[in-house]
Every structure is written in C-alpha cells, then in structure tokens.
Image (cartoon, rainbow, N blue to C red; front, top):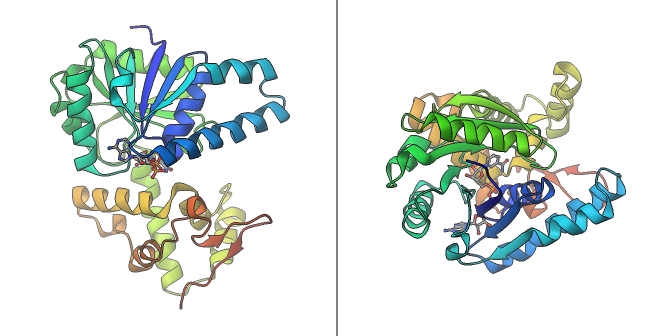
Length: 294
Ligand SMILES: NC(=O)c1ccc[n+]([C@@H]2O[C@H](COP(=O)([O-])OP(=O)(O)OC[C@H]3O[C@@H](n4cnc5c(N)ncnc54)[C@H](O)[C@@H]3O)[C@@H](O)[C@H]2O)c1
C-alpha cells in the first residue's frame, strides 16, 4: 500500500497545509474545494509558506519549484480518481462529511484509502457510511500543518491493520510523528485541550483576568508556548466551538461546551486569525487584545 498520490478535500487552514506537506514530501497532491475563492486563498497561503521556508533555508528554491509542480487544485471530486489516499478536511460538520464520504466511495476505485481529519466526530461512523469500511482511518493533523510534527492515526472499530500501518508509514513519509489512538471522542489532544480552552474563555467571562494577562499567565506560569486564547484564535473560534459542541454531545460533560462569550464572538464574525480578529486583532504589528464587550 505505497502512497504516492494524495487527494485532499477542503482547502481551508488544514487542507492547504496538508496539500503543502504532501507535495514537499515528494508525493503528488490534488486539493479540492467547493469554493473556488477558498482554493485561491489556499494557493496564496501555500506560496507564502513555501517562500518563508526558502528564506529560512529549510527548503531550496528548486525543491520549492518541484513541490509546486506536484500540487494541483480543483473544484471537482472526480479529479481525485487517481489517488492512493484521499484525506477529507472540510468544515467540521457531520452532514457535510457524510456526504463527502458517500460521494468519494461512489467515485473512487475500490483500492483507494479514505481518511478524515475530523477533530471530534466518530471516524467509525464515517467509515460505516461507505462500502469500504475496512479502508477508512483517521489522520488528525495539527495547525499549522507545516510546523506541527504530530499526526494522530485513528483506529476505528472497522479498519484493517494493514490500512492502519499504511497510515503510519504515510505519516513517516511526511517526516511527521504518528501516534496511534482509538476512535474515542477527541482522540488524545482535543480530549485534553478543548476543555482547557473552553475553561480559559469561562475564566475570561468571569473576569478572572484580561485577555493578555490570561495568556501571559499560562505562558509564563505553566510554560505553554502560547496562551489558550491565542491558541483559540489560531485554531479558529468556529472550528473549536464545533468540536466542543460535538464532544459535549458525546461525553455530556459541560467542560466541553462552548461558553456564551465564544458563541457571541463567532456571531460577530470574529473567528480568530483567519478573519483578522478574535480575542486579538491581527494586523502588521503584534496582535492587540480586543474589547470583549464586558
Ligand atoms: N483548525 C484547526 O486547528 C484544526 C486542527 C485539526 C483538525 N481540524 C479539522 O480539520 C477540518 C477542517 O478544518 P479547517 O480549520 O481547515 O476549516 P476551514 O474552515 O479553514 O476550511 C474548511 C474548508 O472546507 C471547504 N468545504 C466545505 N464544504 C465542502 C465540500 N462539501 N466539499 C469541499 N470542500 C468543502 C470550505 O470551503 C473551506 O475551504 C475540520 O474537520 C476540523 O475539525 C482543524
């Protein structure tokens, strides 16, 4: 089960990053999105990221060029027919993911492996929606994909051992570190991280500290590389809330539930870095903490 050609569905924060690392690792990548503007943004994000890597001398100019020739973008799922593996990285919405998995299952030859990058849904459930449940696994990347070394390789109740091993080998091919996890809600990282981030928003709501001080406290007091509110801005407030909602539904533990302030920020269109505003405002200089209407 050697993987040389990879399809990626969804060209947002994660899909564009996955496309980039697949191409720089020497494999061919086709990134598909329903939204042509999202594809344009993905191309620009990949260009900027590769430029940075060349400037830092992590990548040579000829490696950059070669990676770009291995990358294609499309709005048609049919263009993924030649893939060995297709990774779904669309919006965290179960209906959308179900629809993608059933469509991919009809379109793609039997041998193609399917993976989901979902943060919170059951990969077993997505696998069961296809006619190839033994060939479906979870490959949970972290944001920003070109920087973060970990990939959680998710073992469903239905997957073949060989498929799981192919997933582990693929992660090694990307130069990343695989950790095998059971298909339990949130795997390892989000099971621990989502309640922590939601608690940080609740602490802010309760007036425990300001945005800047809350983050500073966790950086300097707990040794975290970034504070939880900065991390939420990086993840995307909408994405974190969708994952929290789903894990709350699964565990019925209120610590997973998105607090009112998070939902208000999302309603106001403040989704974090990707919209230029979240808990902080992002411009040319350092991010500045924003008013929370309290
Ligand atoms: N943001 C993170 O930190 C993070 C980390 C790990 C995993 N994830 C997971 O990765 C997935 C994507 O997250 P993201 O942050 O990249 O989201 P995003 O909002 O940045 O991008 C989602 C993309 O999916 C596209 N899309 C929606 N419906 C589609 C469809 N039917 N067909 C094709 N494309 C479609 C959208 O146009 C958009 O470009 C989610 O499942 C999320 O939980 C996110």
